[in-house]
Image (tube, rainbow, N blue to C red; front, side):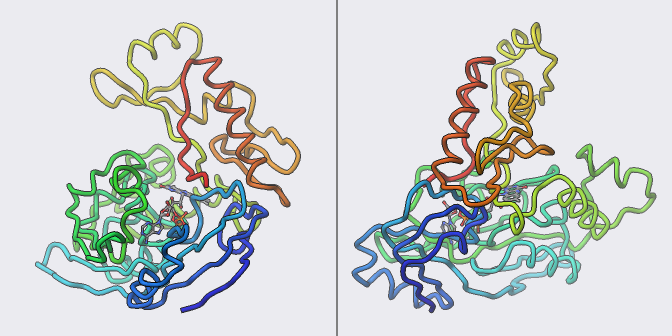
Length: 334
Ligand SMILES: Cc1cc2nc3c(=O)[nH]c(=O)nc-3n(C[C@H](O)[C@H](O)[C@H](O)COP(=O)(O)OP(=O)(O)OC[C@H]3O[C@@H](n4cnc5c(N)ncnc54)[C@H](O)[C@@H]3O)c2cc1C
């Protein structure tokens, strides 16, 4: 267990904003977590964090940030076609994806290089390039803070949706995810439906999961700012879902892309709406909208969380005024 008092949050979040937490506690063994919950600190504000890659602290945090650092990847079952693999919350997501590839456990390739821990992956049901964590999560084992009991959630009980789950919603803050079980395939079954991936690999005759992994890594490196260099938390907003009739009305004025969801609703590209409003590449003080990816708000150095938040609110208001569409924030604002 490691404890840091008056911790600079720059070191614990990818946005790198200027703020402090009263303390950060790093949990290396699960029993340390149980000790924390029987201590006086758990009676004060606390919050679970992973790599802090989906967090924006608007102010200093007066309480304890609990960071899961527990490690372990264990194969539990193998029926010749699929494996079930149990992974501790503190494993780094991309380390696990690469380890799975090495072991010939397939499926996670499209989710390459997403920052964060395995324990956070069910919270917002991470997704990219045509795949989501929910496609592979078999069970989630989590500690209920109120009762001190460990509960196992099946995939259906996690209530996964687009960048959402029961852990971000109804049960927000009530459980600590300890371990995630994944159901992976022993037979390669690559998914290159996503336009960018298809373009890069489309002509190859026999595409391997490793090629998909490498292509996704390349695309991400070209498109997204590296948080080690420019502070950010990936997509700041979710793509909005609107009714088809609203889309048809908008279409009379704007040539917008749409992605069908059902017979009644479709998804619009938040990046496109933000770009049409003229925000792409715009900088105000220490913060701005990334020139290559309008969904990504960036800290050019020295920004406070409140500056990023203010920018996000301005973008939300502009998009709402022009299109009548309210963008939801994907990043957790604290
Ligand atoms: C450059 C960049 C690119 C990104 N690209 C993508 C992408 O393609 N797709 C995508 O989906 N996301 C993306 N993200 C967002 C981010 O990577 C994911 O949301 C990731 O799952 C966050 O993991 P984390 O460990 O950093 O969690 P944190 O940001 O630390 O925490 C996120 C939430 O999970 C909760 N939490 C953390 N650990 C636990 C636990 N053990 N138990 C219970 N709750 C917990 C926290 O309280 C918080 O509410 C990107 C971010 C960056 C910076």
